[in-house]
Length: 244
Image 1 (cartoon, rainbow, N blue to C red):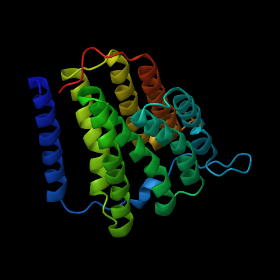
Image 2 (image 1 turned 90 degrees about the vertical axis):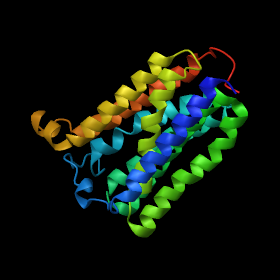
Image 3 (image 1 turned 180 degrees about the horizontal axis):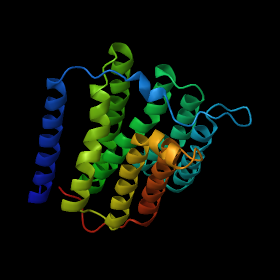
């Protein structure tokens, strides 16, 4: 194994253990019920919370396009399955927001996060490693949601979201394996913007004169991030042999 391969393994392991230890050391994190109180609750065409529901449609378009393109890549297929079902899961949640429907919003997102991580491993260590990591990572993501619904504790789910968002940009920058790094960072930036829109949901809705809410913009920015991932997968080319 080349030194860069050892470095990537040490980085992944160290950040994984450190972040898990930090979360384990703090008290359980429960779901804040104010999370379900979105700014824009208008009903249109008989659909409650209309704009937060229909703004999920771009996920379906990106997911379907990705599945048509990436049928021979297991990690990419799982990624676009997650994106496609985010459209349905998030729409279902936003029609009647509560903890039980939120599960179906979060499950497809965990599929996407874990598949993206498995894909990065496959690019750097070979397709067999990526395929071998995919199902355990997907199971870990699903287990984090089962734990939340069973105990109310969000810490494992937070790790499932936080860990890939932490390590993937580092892997992309320090351990490049393909062309298209700029597209990946565009996707990461758009996802960061989407989280900012989510946080300022009510403020954006008020500032826009109650035309558009932050959460609606969050969906559009996140879908744009997913589209950037699609463009990356369509254009990527290996820089060198995988680490071994």
